[in-house]
Length: 167
Length: 163
Image (cartoon, rainbow over all chains, first blue to last red; front, side, top):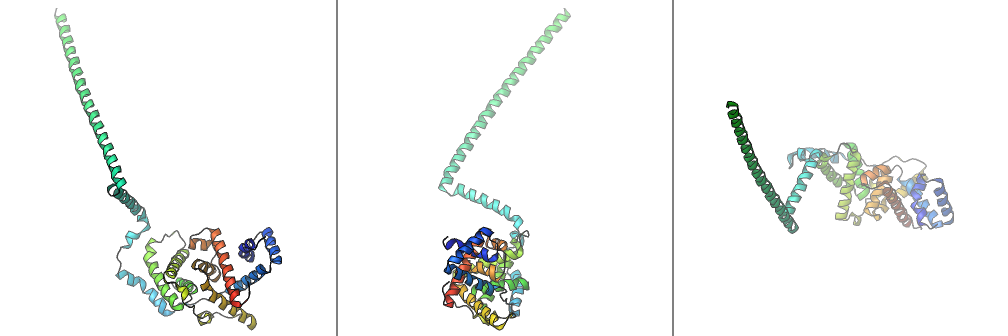
């Protein structure tokens, strides 16, 4: 075993979280490598030194400055807090996406050709709709003619029936 | 408020090594905190969120101003305020080791220094560190291990011995 692999396991070894097989492998290596054994001994010393590391207390002057921050901020608030609420973020994200799409359409060269293609498609679609509308109009006219013919025929038939009945 | 101020001040002091710098950075971090509070997601752990903000600010400032060129405060100037336990010989040895660790922290890169501070000096769990550093758990563990090895090598070098 080279030194690199056991050294990767030193923290877990010192914290006692290594599984027994790896632990044995590390110990076997330590027994045969003085350099790694010395490094581990230094790691132990460092570990002991940092345990219960002393902490500083903030000075009253610092606490006073920190406590004064909210008041100072209120005076210079540029953006109302309501705008920064997380619940509005999807709305802003949607608006940003829309703006990106619009700027792509109007500003980017590829966007312009895309816009042309869209215009062409819209124009074609519109012409098709007009054609269908015109066809529908002619069908309506024809149906009207059929209706008038049918009514005329029925009237003629009624007149014939009446004249036969009078005879 | 005082508990959070203490946490941020200690992180800033351990990272920068300068008390004056730590007070200034704590104030700037709290300014950012008040600015970012409306964006805080209440589903998240507040302490982890605050430490993430502090960590990002400290590393950004470190990269911008390069504190590594500045000298760290003397170790016993502010950090020996805690009670001393054990026999005088052990106490003396532990204080000497602490001084060596303190003086060696600036030899680590910003990310490694932050890892060793959060884990060993501040006693954060690996899971909490993963949340603060926004990294997978395995990456955090391996970074802490590499940081400890680097720190041990510097400490050994300062002692005049070979690691």
